[in-house]
Image 1 (tube, rainbow over the protein chains, first blue to last red):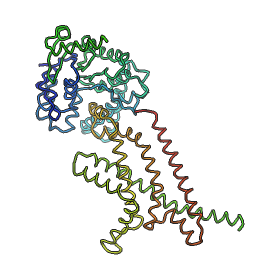
Image 2 (image 1 turned 180 degrees about the vertical axis):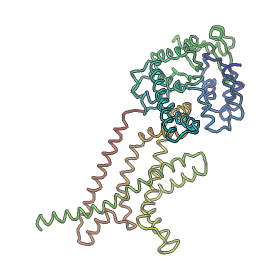
Image 3 (image 1 turned 90 degrees about the horizontal axis):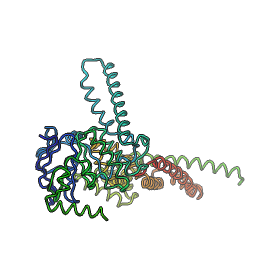
Image 4 (image 1 turned 135 degrees about the vertical axis):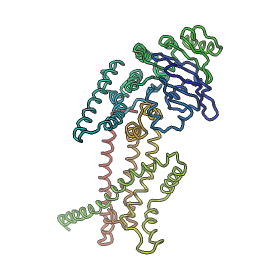
Amino acid sequence: MAYLDIKNFTKSFDKTEVLKGIDLSVEKGEVVSIIGSSGSGKTTLLRCINFLEMADGGEMLLDGEVLFNEQTKNEKDEVLRKKRLNFGLVFQSFNLFPQYSVYKNITLAPTVLLKDKIKKYKKSLNGISFKEKREKVKLFKETELKLIDEKCLALLETIGLTEKKDAYPCELSGGQCQRVAIARALALEPKILCFDEPTSALDPELTGEVLKVIKELKNKDRTMIIVTHEMGFAKNVSDKIVFMADGVIEEIGSPKKVLENPKSEKLKHFLQSVTNKDGE
Amino acid sequence: MNYLLLSSQFLTISLDLLVGFVETLKIFFVTLLISLPLGLLIAFGSMSKLKPLKWFCNTFVWIIRGTPLMLQLIIVYYGPGLIFGVGKGLSAYLSTFITFGINYACYFSEIYRGGIESISKGQYEAGKVLGLTKGQIFFKVILMQVVKRIIPPMSNEIITLVKDTSLARIITFYELIFFAQRYIKDGGLLWPLFYTAVYYLVFTALLTLLFRFIEKKLSYYKV
């Protein structure tokens, strides 16, 4: 069984069927790119995987654990929140928090979520005096905060923005913002990192730096799902390419197979229109 | 009249008016104390998914913003007495605080709502995918951005409040204007009434400076 297994995902908005039964499997350490023209449902698929939208039907398993089935729709926010943490999502428009520095953007969620961790730790401490307990919790908190700090600094190095640690998002270029957004998602150590057109909002000369970071992540065996319009990049970085059209997966396979030997008319047409655009 | 007498009269009246101004300030601060948090509650209500609550809040805001504050003061002050009999009404103090508090809460709620709704959906979604709860998203991510956006309209409304306090005089709340008007009746002096403008002007000037300072403090980032 694959690492991530999606079976028969469906989703409609009002009467428009956006996903018409999607089957997709992703292996651990695999990079899967989803391509397709706008309106094909690729972003919706990504949002359903991240529980930003609730799929209408189907099933999703991660590492053998059921994350989504028919019952999930009635699940409480608390449960969904935990499920969401299996995934990270990098948005097209970055969505950094403008009022916080780069450092705080990356450390905010881990620091906030630490409170839950501390609560759990407190409960696990039994049969010791109040004073001893307080000391232990304090030590635990300090160690954890130090870990968060170290991880943040390491991530800043990965994205090559160590010197921008204290800068605010408004002081960064689009490419730098997107790199920070990647680091922010990685800080929570998601099992699968998703990208929703990570370079679409960037000037052409800035896409390279973001793609370079993603490529480095591939070298570190990150499992990633990337919705993208960058054909060259998709070919380069993916283990598997998924072509979506009108809410279904038209073709799926290795980059070579999908991009060089397209079978369906829709994919041929799509690839032609993409190359034409590049040629202009 | 010599200068000494004139200046001592000026000083006496200035101090007397200052006492009146303290009463004015009471309305000002108590109103803010009530309306700033109450406005947020009304704003949440008017954005609620519960249709009846949303409808109720919207109607309430419509009625309060659609009628004169002076009329509201009169209704709250005289209404209970008329309905339940003489002596059952509220004091001038209480009536003023309640009416002003509710009235300004409604205006603030619309400013809050506008501010909250102006924050992009992406900010909420970013908080969500980072595993934050709704409360954490609101307090850690959204609130500061809202505050930055609503400072200009809020300062406008708060400065209006400084001057609206003079309406409380209609239900015998002895504030600054009331203090000054006594000099017309008692001694035929008109200038103290004109002079009250100085108190308002100085106070609104201080508020303007304060808001400018806050705006500058928050200008370290752009949205």
